[in-house]
Image (cartoon, rainbow, N blue to C red; front, top):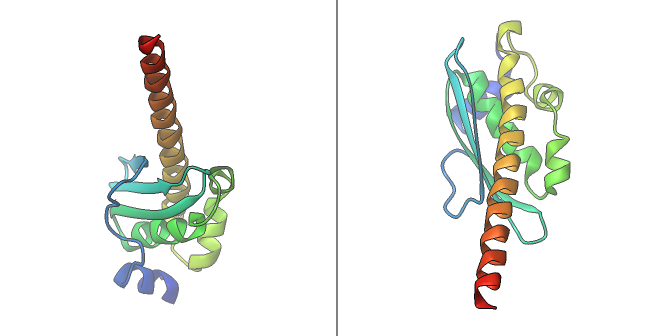
Length: 137
């Protein structure tokens, strides 16, 4: 049995779709169940998540979990986003079958993957910028 919140988020996700200009993208999946989540972040120069969107292939619990996860990280710093847990996602969504709880875990993991990607991109850009500065000397 799914909660009303899960059904509502599945039918009318608030954060579904890609995100033009995303500077952090995390993709996670569970081969056993077939759920695949991709989270897109738009992070400003101060490390604040201005927007978060998702594309999820999976069941209604997977889609609802990713939607809630995006809501939970908008307006947060990257460090704050990394503190979002699957329990927070689960608590907002309410009742779901025990074998679907892994969807909230995947949502947490997708946040971590997107933040990690952001830092990798930023580091790569910084190295490229430093190399360009060295070339000018």
